[in-house]
Amino acid sequence: MSTVMEETISSAIVRSFFKKFENHLAVDVGIVGAGPSGLVAAKYLADMGFKVAMFESKLAPGGGTWGGGMLFNEVVVQEDATTILKDFNISTVDLGNGYHTLDSVEMASGLIFGARKAGAVIFNTMCVEDICVREGVVCGLVVNWNPVRRLEMHVDPVVVTARAVLDGTGHPSEIVHKAVDKAGLKVDSPTGGIMGEKPMWMEDGERTTVINTKRLYPGLYASGMAANNVQGGFRMGPIFGGMLKSGKKVAELIAADLRA
Ligand code: 48F
Image 1 (cartoon, protein in one colour):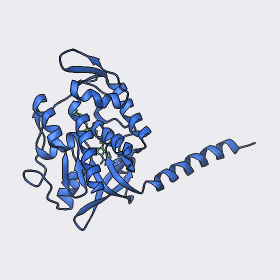
Image 2: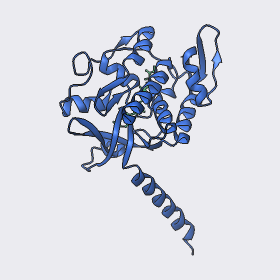
Image 3: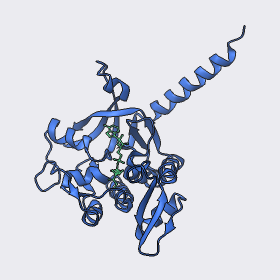
Image 4: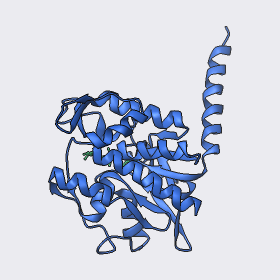
Protein backbone atom coordinates (compact mmCIF):
# COMPACT_ATOMS: atom_id res chain seq x y z
CA MET A 1 0.00 0.00 0.00
CA SER A 2 1.50 3.34 -1.06
CA THR A 3 0.76 6.64 0.64
CA VAL A 4 3.27 8.59 -1.47
CA MET A 5 0.63 10.81 -3.06
CA GLU A 6 -0.97 11.68 0.29
CA GLU A 7 2.43 12.55 1.78
CA THR A 8 3.43 14.60 -1.27
CA ILE A 9 0.23 16.65 -1.26
CA SER A 10 0.20 17.34 2.48
CA SER A 11 3.87 18.29 2.40
CA ALA A 12 3.36 20.58 -0.61
CA ILE A 13 0.52 22.46 1.08
CA VAL A 14 2.29 22.83 4.42
CA ARG A 15 5.60 23.93 2.87
CA SER A 16 4.10 26.39 0.42
CA PHE A 17 1.77 27.91 3.02
CA PHE A 18 4.51 28.46 5.59
CA LYS A 19 6.88 29.85 2.95
CA LYS A 20 4.16 32.36 1.98
CA PHE A 21 3.32 33.23 5.58
CA GLU A 22 6.93 33.58 6.68
CA ASN A 23 7.59 35.80 3.68
CA HIS A 24 4.79 38.11 4.85
CA LEU A 25 5.57 38.43 8.55
CA ALA A 26 7.11 41.85 7.82
CA VAL A 27 5.36 43.85 5.10
CA ASP A 28 5.08 47.39 3.78
CA VAL A 29 1.30 47.43 4.12
CA GLY A 30 -0.95 45.26 6.27
CA ILE A 31 -4.59 45.50 5.21
CA VAL A 32 -7.32 44.32 7.53
CA GLY A 33 -10.46 43.23 5.72
CA ALA A 34 -10.75 42.20 2.09
CA GLY A 35 -13.85 44.21 1.20
CA PRO A 36 -13.96 46.35 -1.96
CA SER A 37 -12.00 49.33 -0.58
CA GLY A 38 -9.25 47.12 0.85
CA LEU A 39 -8.98 45.03 -2.32
CA VAL A 40 -8.67 48.11 -4.54
CA ALA A 41 -6.00 49.54 -2.20
CA ALA A 42 -4.17 46.20 -2.23
CA LYS A 43 -4.00 46.04 -6.02
CA TYR A 44 -2.76 49.58 -6.53
CA LEU A 45 -0.18 49.31 -3.72
CA ALA A 46 1.09 45.98 -5.04
CA ASP A 47 1.21 47.45 -8.57
CA MET A 48 3.44 50.21 -7.14
CA GLY A 49 5.83 47.57 -5.83
CA PHE A 50 4.90 47.52 -2.13
CA LYS A 51 4.73 44.24 -0.24
CA VAL A 52 1.09 43.85 0.79
CA ALA A 53 -0.57 41.30 3.05
CA MET A 54 -4.34 41.25 3.58
CA PHE A 55 -6.05 39.53 6.47
CA GLU A 56 -9.68 38.54 6.01
CA SER A 57 -11.54 36.87 8.83
CA LYS A 58 -14.06 35.12 6.57
CA LEU A 59 -13.35 32.14 4.32
CA ALA A 60 -14.31 34.14 1.22
CA PRO A 61 -12.74 37.57 0.67
CA GLY A 62 -14.98 40.20 -0.95
CA GLY A 63 -16.77 41.66 2.06
CA GLY A 64 -20.18 43.18 1.37
CA THR A 65 -19.81 42.89 -2.41
CA TRP A 66 -21.23 39.43 -3.06
CA GLY A 67 -24.81 39.99 -1.93
CA GLY A 68 -25.63 43.04 -4.08
CA GLY A 69 -28.69 44.79 -2.67
CA MET A 70 -30.85 42.54 -0.50
CA LEU A 71 -29.31 39.45 -2.12
CA PHE A 72 -30.24 40.67 -5.64
CA ASN A 73 -26.74 40.10 -6.97
CA GLU A 74 -26.30 43.37 -8.85
CA VAL A 75 -24.61 46.54 -7.62
CA VAL A 76 -24.40 50.10 -8.91
CA VAL A 77 -21.38 52.35 -9.50
CA GLN A 78 -21.11 55.93 -10.69
CA GLU A 79 -19.60 56.68 -14.10
CA ASP A 80 -16.42 58.20 -12.60
CA ALA A 81 -15.57 54.98 -10.73
CA THR A 82 -15.70 52.74 -13.80
CA THR A 83 -12.05 53.47 -14.65
CA ILE A 84 -11.08 51.58 -11.48
CA LEU A 85 -13.22 48.61 -12.53
CA LYS A 86 -11.57 48.70 -15.96
CA ASP A 87 -8.18 48.36 -14.24
CA PHE A 88 -9.54 45.06 -12.87
CA ASN A 89 -11.09 44.08 -16.23
CA ILE A 90 -14.57 44.07 -14.64
CA SER A 91 -17.50 44.80 -16.98
CA THR A 92 -20.40 47.16 -16.35
CA VAL A 93 -23.66 48.05 -18.08
CA ASP A 94 -24.05 51.78 -18.75
CA LEU A 95 -27.53 52.98 -17.77
CA GLY A 96 -26.93 56.25 -19.63
CA ASN A 97 -27.75 58.41 -16.60
CA GLY A 98 -24.38 58.57 -14.87
CA TYR A 99 -24.76 55.13 -13.28
CA HIS A 100 -23.66 51.63 -14.27
CA THR A 101 -24.83 48.25 -12.99
CA LEU A 102 -22.63 45.21 -12.62
CA ASP A 103 -22.87 41.63 -11.50
CA SER A 104 -21.83 41.50 -7.84
CA VAL A 105 -20.22 38.06 -8.25
CA GLU A 106 -18.06 39.35 -11.11
CA MET A 107 -17.17 42.38 -9.00
CA ALA A 108 -16.18 40.40 -5.90
CA SER A 109 -14.24 37.75 -7.78
CA GLY A 110 -12.65 40.33 -10.11
CA LEU A 111 -11.44 42.50 -7.23
CA ILE A 112 -10.01 39.48 -5.41
CA PHE A 113 -8.30 38.14 -8.51
CA GLY A 114 -6.92 41.57 -9.45
CA ALA A 115 -5.47 42.22 -6.00
CA ARG A 116 -3.93 38.76 -5.87
CA LYS A 117 -2.53 38.91 -9.42
CA ALA A 118 -0.94 42.29 -8.68
CA GLY A 119 1.02 40.53 -5.94
CA ALA A 120 -0.95 41.21 -2.75
CA VAL A 121 -1.24 38.07 -0.63
CA ILE A 122 -4.59 37.37 1.03
CA PHE A 123 -4.67 35.36 4.23
CA ASN A 124 -8.30 34.36 4.55
CA THR A 125 -9.83 32.95 7.73
CA MET A 126 -7.31 35.01 9.71
CA CYS A 127 -8.53 37.86 11.87
CA VAL A 128 -6.64 40.79 13.28
CA GLU A 129 -7.34 41.04 16.98
CA ASP A 130 -4.96 43.81 18.05
CA ILE A 131 -2.29 46.26 16.86
CA CYS A 132 1.28 47.19 17.82
CA VAL A 133 2.21 50.81 18.53
CA ARG A 134 5.82 51.92 19.04
CA GLU A 135 7.09 55.45 19.58
CA GLY A 136 3.91 57.05 18.28
CA VAL A 137 3.58 54.87 15.18
CA VAL A 138 1.17 52.01 14.47
CA CYS A 139 3.55 49.33 13.24
CA GLY A 140 2.00 45.88 13.43
CA LEU A 141 -0.99 43.57 13.39
CA VAL A 142 -1.78 40.84 15.87
CA VAL A 143 -3.26 37.93 13.92
CA ASN A 144 -4.96 34.70 14.78
CA TRP A 145 -7.27 32.18 13.12
CA ASN A 146 -10.83 33.43 13.07
CA PRO A 147 -12.22 30.04 14.18
CA VAL A 148 -10.03 30.40 17.28
CA ARG A 149 -11.72 33.73 18.01
CA ARG A 150 -15.20 32.43 17.27
CA LEU A 151 -14.75 29.38 19.49
CA GLU A 152 -13.23 31.63 22.19
CA MET A 153 -10.23 29.33 22.43
CA HIS A 154 -7.44 30.57 24.68
CA VAL A 155 -4.73 30.61 21.98
CA ASP A 156 -2.12 33.32 21.64
CA PRO A 157 -1.73 35.09 18.30
CA VAL A 158 1.36 35.98 16.23
CA VAL A 159 2.47 39.39 14.99
CA VAL A 160 2.90 40.73 11.48
CA THR A 161 4.87 43.98 11.36
CA ALA A 162 3.84 46.63 8.83
CA ARG A 163 5.06 50.08 7.87
CA ALA A 164 1.43 51.06 7.27
CA VAL A 165 -1.78 49.51 8.58
CA LEU A 166 -5.10 49.95 6.75
CA ASP A 167 -8.41 49.43 8.52
CA GLY A 168 -10.72 48.10 5.80
CA THR A 169 -12.98 46.25 8.21
CA GLY A 170 -16.15 48.02 7.06
CA HIS A 171 -18.90 49.25 9.37
CA PRO A 172 -17.28 48.23 12.70
CA SER A 173 -13.84 49.83 12.01
CA GLU A 174 -12.34 47.24 14.32
CA ILE A 175 -8.73 48.33 13.99
CA VAL A 176 -9.38 51.99 14.73
CA HIS A 177 -11.37 50.81 17.75
CA LYS A 178 -8.25 49.02 18.99
CA ALA A 179 -6.22 52.18 18.40
CA VAL A 180 -8.68 54.42 20.24
CA ASP A 181 -10.14 52.18 22.96
CA LYS A 182 -7.16 49.99 23.77
CA ALA A 183 -4.06 51.97 22.79
CA GLY A 184 -5.63 55.30 23.82
CA LEU A 185 -4.58 57.03 20.58
CA LYS A 186 -6.22 60.27 19.44
CA VAL A 187 -7.00 59.84 15.76
CA ASP A 188 -7.59 62.50 13.09
CA SER A 189 -11.36 62.90 13.51
CA PRO A 190 -13.40 65.83 14.86
CA THR A 191 -13.38 64.32 18.37
CA GLY A 192 -10.12 62.38 18.20
CA GLY A 193 -12.25 59.25 18.57
CA ILE A 194 -14.82 57.29 16.56
CA MET A 195 -17.85 59.41 15.65
CA GLY A 196 -20.09 56.49 14.58
CA GLU A 197 -21.86 55.91 11.29
CA LYS A 198 -24.99 57.94 10.50
CA PRO A 199 -28.12 56.46 8.83
CA MET A 200 -28.73 56.01 5.10
CA TRP A 201 -28.11 59.00 2.82
CA MET A 202 -26.63 57.68 -0.40
CA GLU A 203 -25.52 60.93 -2.00
CA ASP A 204 -23.79 62.37 1.05
CA GLY A 205 -22.39 58.99 2.13
CA GLU A 206 -20.81 58.43 -1.27
CA ARG A 207 -19.29 61.92 -1.36
CA THR A 208 -17.89 61.82 2.15
CA THR A 209 -16.51 58.26 1.97
CA VAL A 210 -13.72 59.58 -0.22
CA ILE A 211 -13.19 62.72 1.89
CA ASN A 212 -13.18 60.60 5.07
CA THR A 213 -10.44 58.35 3.68
CA LYS A 214 -7.30 59.57 5.39
CA ARG A 215 -4.31 58.87 7.58
CA LEU A 216 -5.74 58.77 11.08
CA TYR A 217 -2.50 58.45 13.02
CA PRO A 218 1.11 57.78 11.98
CA GLY A 219 1.05 54.33 10.38
CA LEU A 220 -2.76 54.00 10.57
CA TYR A 221 -5.26 54.60 7.74
CA ALA A 222 -8.94 53.76 7.16
CA SER A 223 -10.88 53.20 3.96
CA GLY A 224 -14.46 52.47 2.94
CA MET A 225 -17.12 52.15 5.62
CA ALA A 226 -14.45 52.00 8.33
CA ALA A 227 -13.41 55.54 7.33
CA ASN A 228 -17.05 56.65 7.32
CA ASN A 229 -17.69 55.18 10.75
CA VAL A 230 -14.67 56.97 12.22
CA GLN A 231 -15.63 60.37 10.78
CA GLY A 232 -19.41 60.07 11.32
CA GLY A 233 -20.36 59.69 7.64
CA PHE A 234 -23.68 58.41 6.31
CA ARG A 235 -24.22 54.85 5.08
CA MET A 236 -25.08 54.37 1.43
CA GLY A 237 -26.08 50.76 0.68
CA PRO A 238 -25.46 48.94 -2.61
CA ILE A 239 -23.69 51.73 -4.52
CA PHE A 240 -19.95 51.09 -4.62
CA GLY A 241 -18.23 53.99 -6.40
CA GLY A 242 -17.24 55.57 -3.09
CA MET A 243 -15.70 52.29 -1.88
CA LEU A 244 -13.63 51.90 -5.04
CA LYS A 245 -12.45 55.52 -5.01
CA SER A 246 -11.67 55.30 -1.30
CA GLY A 247 -9.43 52.28 -1.95
CA LYS A 248 -7.58 54.10 -4.70
CA LYS A 249 -7.19 57.26 -2.60
CA VAL A 250 -5.84 55.41 0.42
CA ALA A 251 -3.33 53.54 -1.77
CA GLU A 252 -2.01 56.88 -3.04
CA LEU A 253 -1.85 58.32 0.51
CA ILE A 254 0.01 55.29 1.86
CA ALA A 255 2.39 55.21 -1.10
CA ALA A 256 3.24 58.90 -0.67
CA ASP A 257 3.89 58.45 3.08
CA LEU A 258 6.01 55.33 2.60
CA ARG A 259 8.09 57.04 -0.07
CA ALA A 260 8.61 60.23 1.99
O1 48F B 1 -17.56 45.78 4.84
P1 48F B 1 -16.64 45.47 3.72
O2 48F B 1 -17.23 45.06 2.43
O3 48F B 1 -15.60 46.71 3.53
P2 48F B 1 -15.64 48.08 2.72
O4 48F B 1 -14.52 48.07 1.77
O5 48F B 1 -16.98 48.02 1.84
C1 48F B 1 -18.24 48.26 2.39
C2 48F B 1 -19.29 47.71 1.46
O6 48F B 1 -19.12 46.34 1.25
C3 48F B 1 -20.72 47.91 1.94
C4 48F B 1 -21.24 49.26 1.66
C5 48F B 1 -21.11 49.75 0.25
O7 48F B 1 -21.89 50.80 0.02
O8 48F B 1 -21.73 49.88 2.53
O9 48F B 1 -20.84 47.57 3.31
O10 48F B 1 -15.76 49.18 3.69
O11 48F B 1 -15.60 44.33 4.13
C6 48F B 1 -14.91 44.36 5.34
C7 48F B 1 -14.23 43.02 5.51
O12 48F B 1 -13.42 43.06 6.67
C8 48F B 1 -13.48 41.79 7.30
C9 48F B 1 -14.92 41.35 7.09
O13 48F B 1 -15.06 39.94 7.19
C10 48F B 1 -15.20 41.86 5.69
O14 48F B 1 -14.94 40.89 4.69
N1 48F B 1 -13.08 41.99 8.71
C11 48F B 1 -13.77 42.68 9.65
N2 48F B 1 -13.08 42.68 10.81
C12 48F B 1 -11.95 41.97 10.59
C13 48F B 1 -11.95 41.52 9.24
C14 48F B 1 -10.81 41.62 11.39
N3 48F B 1 -10.71 42.01 12.68
N4 48F B 1 -9.82 40.88 10.84
C15 48F B 1 -9.90 40.47 9.53
N5 48F B 1 -10.97 40.80 8.73
